[in-house]
Image (tube, rainbow, N blue to C red; front, side, top):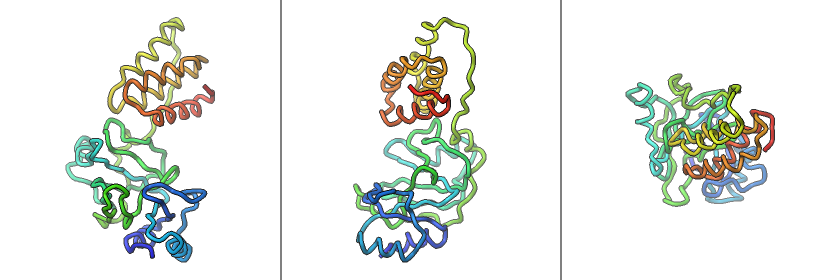
Length: 246
């Protein structure tokens, strides 16, 4: 049967659930077929005994802290002038990190800007792992650490979690110099600015019709330590923003 803490998420927070293996969805449709139907979930639990559960709460985003990659929620909130963590639902993960829930209806980035090791999860595009699940590497349970109502996202966090606004700006330098400048700017990006600068570089190249620069920008972004997946996300976002394909 479904773990009691998972059921609490279903009942108290109107979570929608679906079975996962470790952290990965394995049924067709993935998180898009998450359900709040208790009978349907019990049938899935009998069909896939011992499975983990992914959860989605509409209108709720999660700060996903990964200490192994430098994530530290205390440092994040101290940096925005908050001396203690907000009072909100918090889950301790099986790897020792935390998932902190906030109500927020707008779009968000994939990571907190300028703070390594803190990802952002949106109900619109993904899911988080439910308490009562077992971490596939450590064997430890995800558990509810702070059993509190879900608070609104602190306004001080908005600049760090909302996507950057793309603003086209005309340039007067010759094409060769401005192209070299795009690639150089991406290659020189560090820390939390790497994703937004790579996105900006792709936008500029596509806006100018310089799709031939995309491979150079990709190589420059790789040299800063971004992954292929992160770079591809930046490129897709730039294509949507500019309405132009690479």
